[in-house]
Every structure is written in C-alpha cells, then in structure tokens.
Amino acid sequence: MPSLKELPPRRPEPPAPDDSPVRWERIDLDRYEVRAGGATVGFIDVVGAVFVALAGRRYDRAVEVLQTLDFAVAVGSISPPGAERPSP
Image (tube, rainbow, N blue to C red; front, side):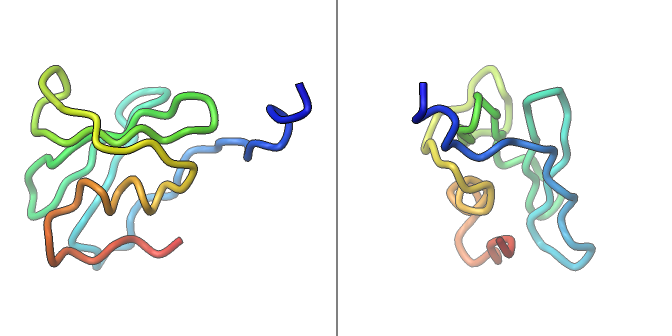
C-alpha cells in the first residue's frame, strides 16, 4: 500500500540528555520505560510507526493515553506537569 510507505521508519531513540529531568530507557525490542525523578511514570510501546504512550508505574496496569508518530510528544504526554519535554 502506498500510504504505508509514507510512514517514517523507526529506529531506536537516542537516550535522554544527561541533564533531562525525564529519562527513558529501551527495555525491550519495542518498549521504552519513562522515568521522572527516579520513578517510573509510564511506558512507550512502538507499534509499527506509531508510539503508544501508557501512563502508570507498572506496565501491566498502565493506561493508554496517546498514539502519535512523534516520540517527544509521547514522552511529554506521560511526563509530570512542570517536567521539560524532550527536544525533537
């Protein structure tokens, strides 16, 4: 399908900057754990070209809050208020 070829390819996201209050780590082939203040605030699943943001401290209880093509937007959607969003 031509529309599928228009979706951006996904490569592993680079780690968060050292001075970032919000950090993420790739914990599986298609999953990132997002932490703020040393505590887990959510997860991001990579499903094809889409980032699915899940809010919650435990993956098995996390709630989907957003689907987006932009990793920074996904991280920002589960970051606590006042935390800086990652730069695109």
